[in-house]
Length: 85
Image 1 (cartoon, rainbow, N blue to C red):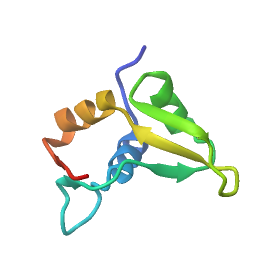
Image 2: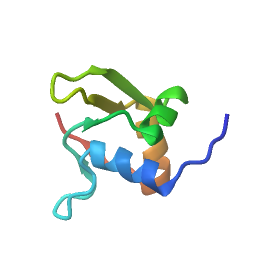
Image 3: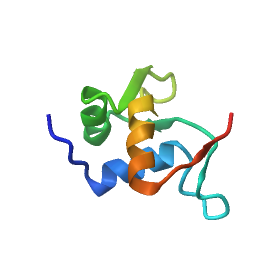
Image 4: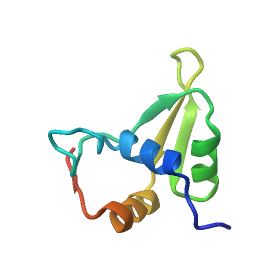
């Protein structure tokens, strides 16, 4: 099992958590990423850094979520962030 991650994977995880906002870059306000089946996300799911929900009713897409393990990984890489419900 490799502990390396692509820039794209890390960006997708940050986007899923809402950590790409300019006005509040250290505040996570969500945890979802809606897309067709995605190789980057599937790799993260396989390694335990993300979870996938079944097919979404919208155009047959999937909902990916960053797992607790994935959140801890991001905190190690980008620093701590606040999780808002």
